[in-house]
Image (cartoon, rainbow, N blue to C red; front, side, top):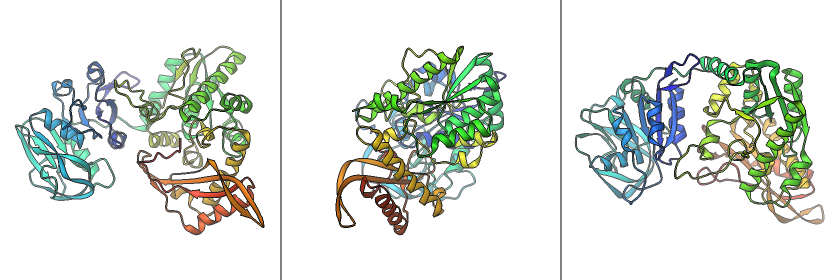
Length: 521
């Protein structure tokens, strides 16, 4: 159990041990949707960290490796020594079986997609469900021989051992993924583990959490001032509202106009927070500083780090002007921490750094306040609703911390940002007009580092290419490219080429995640 409450009462925690699956965060989110706290740690984390959590149960995630190979991840001994319920999923099942004496093989017939699961034995995980379920498989290896003292629970046509359970201990394993929406009644399977096996309590409630966070902020900050870098995005907006409730006018918001924002966004942010919410907001016009620091830089990671460092430099400068600023608040959320490998794994693989996680200089003069650091995006939005923020603000498409800096491929100039702002504005404006904005999860334009020949009127035009990207997703861990109508895409393309003379061609990105990421950089 983890100490997360204002009165030091420990709350029940389901630990998710991460073996590298694309669905790991989704497991934790599904647990939290049932009002039970869940935390993710890498499989090779220091054992003392696992002990300190005192988990009510442990879920072993899937992963890309094969237990048939040497030196691939294994379940640490501490997981078995704790004597708490264990649920292995996909790779988690395979390494569990292999470590407990079973045999895993690389199957000739790999399973990716839907499969019919036949439940052949009584098992608490399938309580109140039928004997046949449509489940989602994604694996090459499979368990061939059960470990000692394990019973077969369910099979599919190509995986004879698709679910197993220990005869006497609360140890279970599934070859399929109950956490994905494609698995029929997957949420019930997880809930049966959480409540019937782990007997976890529903301690993770948003209204309680807000009160707890307000108290934590007050305890950390005391009578000092806090500087918040306000972007106008969901994360920083909710952070601002939460801090405002906690410390009132001790919060000083600095809105940095870095020249990498969407068209009209600077004016919109100032109007929302300064005029409507009455927050203390200072606008810092820093476009020239950012562009100067980014001049000639083309590497995406380098750009992110430069933008992060420049943000902190600006904050330090503003703090010096304001005097007595000891704390810097950030809207860091849980996926930022995980994707930046901030989880202390010995074999951490950086997907991408975030300006509010991976780009902080060591000499930063202020102490961090990060009240959303353990929340997923949907939880942040739920908190925003409770804090009274508008649904329009909360349901706005995500915008990366580095802004257009990672949507301009190659080096960044003022001319390129101007072109991209116009193209992006046209795309979003047309999505709203066509009532399509809410049907996609994220949509934006990308400035590509290529030129293309076009014909406008009777003249040839050798000009820039703009890429359009729109995706549909539930959790942003996986995403499908949005199948927007052809006539809509044609209208957007025509407007961009006709209204922006520097653009000669528009392309539409039809890549899903994985293998692509949502952002291009």
